Image 1 (tube, rainbow, N blue to C red):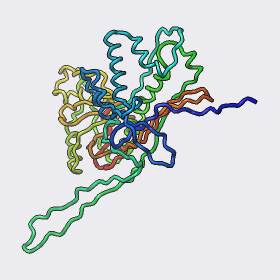
Image 2 (image 1 turned 180 degrees about the vertical axis):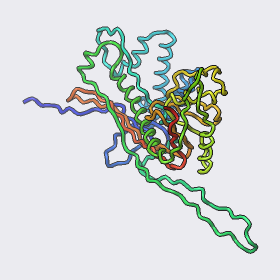
Image 3 (image 1 turned 90 degrees about the vertical axis):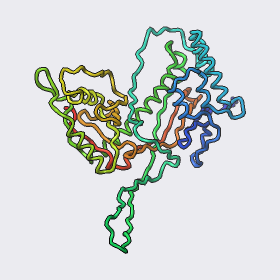
Length: 387
């Protein structure tokens, strides 16, 4: 009789992000009936993002965001120092094979020698509106958000011996539930063997999955904005309308701007943000009234402004989020960004699982994320700003 050995799934490099301290930990893949545990820290995700954006001249400075935990396998600061040192050496010497070896030596099977002449990389527009609102940690995935109303009164001309009657502040409460989102990519053992030159496809798909995650979160924020802003519609003007010879702008945004300032003044809000498709921003800055009242004035620099945050001419202190992920081609959205909405983030998990039975390797990531407009009086939709 032949004795068969059972094949079991193997989990590699499971990690979990704690939304409260922004630290990525090794994940123990807890049973469903246990709370999440955060025990062995790997790196601080927020500090990593800041260090990467700072572009320090010291290539090893980024290793400061990693943690050592007392063993060779868990001294992640030492491991990061080793990897970044080798990558920097490969960069200085121009040895691309050395850089490739660092990435593929432990994790990936060698590729066959068939030659790919070239390829078009997929462009994934991730959107930037996910950055709009402050993120609030929601480790329990449910809760409530309290917004106080500005309705206390201070009485004047009180009669002698008369004490003011107390006024009570009021507040509104919304219930918050943070749903789970996720995605996965997989590759078979056969695919590894027949894949041709041009880079590791599994690694590329894993990176693209992160971009898809970012886009999904931008869409969640966009949908929250567009759903509530319509309750405070304001009639706009078509910034790009032109007529005459040479063609000049036929609309003046001044009255609209004053209307919006009055709208936020009435709600005790601070107008600080505009969100729209990119071309609407372009039409605003190209409006002849905005750029000096002369149709012959030089055209300001335009370029591709989607997925960017711009200063707003004639409105100092107001940031314009230009992002083509917005669905409307005729409207823009104005808000008090700091108080109108909040994004709630729970734990984020990721791991790679290999299954000898199905001969596959699968990368999985799961996250908890939701956006709520917590004060709908501080956001409005401005209609008809483009034709």
